[in-house]
Image (cartoon, helix red, strand yellow):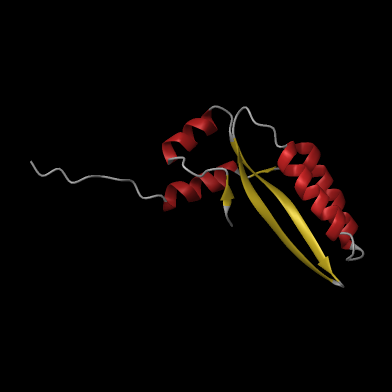
Length: 113
């Protein structure tokens, strides 16, 4: 999954922003086609001074338009997306930080004096 809103940030800056109150949130998506449902989600990095409403509203509208068709679980997922809209997203800060720290190479220059 692609993590949105971390373009141009180093791991040090991300860790500082998380200590100041930033977090990684996920808003679940459900798209129904006939009797099949496809679940997915997008990851957003929310800075300490930012509100999650602008991200959540887009996903809720998508779920409301495309997620209700798969009966009986479609309406359940729309209600679940409304719950996460109110809550501010599903917090995935620790697992994503662990993954980013594990996969982010640290630059260590060779000092040949």
